[in-house]
Length: 214
Ligand code: CO
Image (cartoon, rainbow, N blue to C red):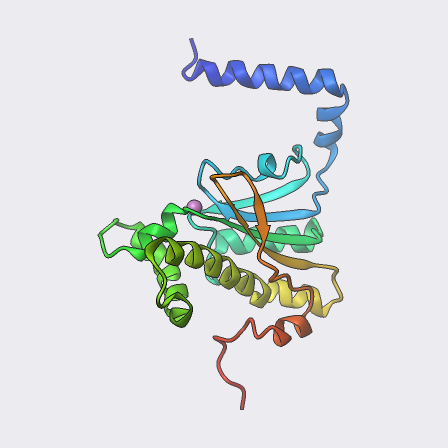
């Protein structure tokens, strides 16, 4: 018997159900993918991209890592952004964080978590950049706010990436969104931080951590 047999069984059941609903489903998908959305989300098992927006395979290109962080030197994430923008021509990049994020919580602690503390430094930086917004809040409020601020910061990082800047300069129809998901109620909230152009980015002062111009 195969290891993890129950997963193979459930896969077979799922594939058969799909074929029953639409006999062409897999043959069409195998020809090409043309998703309109790139989803950058947390690896948390409770925040599965396709399921929470109720979209079938083929509709969302997905990148997930701990605490949905977009780091300018992360070749993995940058490659996903570049491929989805330049080749797939997605129209929307969605950075979706979630309340109760374990990565954000760990970043707020002083404990030693091992290697991951290096990754979480990026979130500690978000806290440092926005210290004034976190002052005077209780623990729950601080955690919720840092989850939101982290999304806003990562939207800014996506917008300031050379890939998105180039796409906008070439006239691409591309919007970057910041959302947050409630694991306790299943509802997504738009943080109203969407940006569609270099001008909008400048206006929102999203690149406020950039070096000052002369
Ligand atoms: Co998380």
